[in-house]
Image (cartoon, rainbow, N blue to C red; front, side):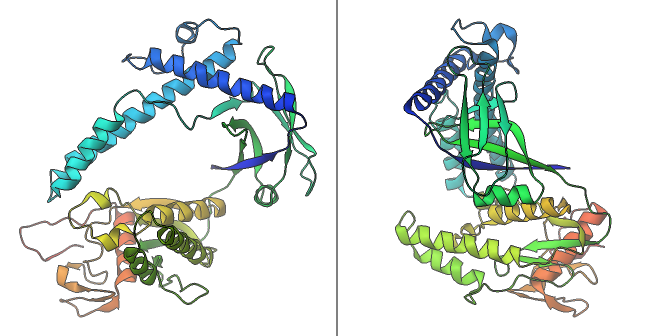
Length: 387
């Protein structure tokens, strides 16, 4: 399994000439991409940067450079069409269950806003191994590493030095290698990608994981994330965030505090004895009618991302399970009822089994994942057995 990490490098420009040349090639790439997007946008069938497409524009630049600009324009179009399709899919899902009309109207407005040819802002020029050669020397200090840029005709052919950062050195020391790919933005920042081959673990346990509002993570083995170094719990930060005005400075500070709490909590967990991890497949939560203001502060996307990065580096295989009714089912006898769950505690109405609600949910996620099932209501009754 190959994993990748991207990093922004600190580039030291030796003179203004190099800076001007780098800016020139960036502007050329931006201009060509806009022109190709004008050509591609009304087309229905073009799926790749063909020779016919990138030869439609006649400029004094290499064919390779035309091709990457044409491919960039195609990627921009595909990205927008994909966003529109996802929003339409969410609308279709919401119509099948109780929904909030305000959310539906909001989604339609979003589709109307994004489903048109965009004005390219935040453009990044991607150069692969056909244009660059990277020579790293992995020294702690000093600009001794070089990026050679060529194959761009007379516009640009030069060497750029870059500085190793702490994060860069950390990745290299952990076995990551630099790939032949850089991305250039309008601020003359270079982003490079480091990759690493990781073998999946062959020894260890298969664990279910519940992502909660009270505890960041709860495992079916009984392990849960602990309070942070300031002895704060996650619900405290969620309530604090609800009191802030969105967009204010205090709101941003509280968001950063919550994100740091999540990262610290995950870093403290011992993953050494885990081989396979089943997690919840949560989608479109914020658009559902029952989603409260408190629930909208829940950063499940960040938790998923951090957990995924952690497992990738350790060779742990991540699998997803449908989370429907996992918080209502008794992991001991299989009885499903809304009344089983009471806040952070869980007590089964049939077998009187008592457990932590999040750990019980993690056990159900493990059960659903391993058996490839979904806890759906099998009758008109609100309570039923699911084994």
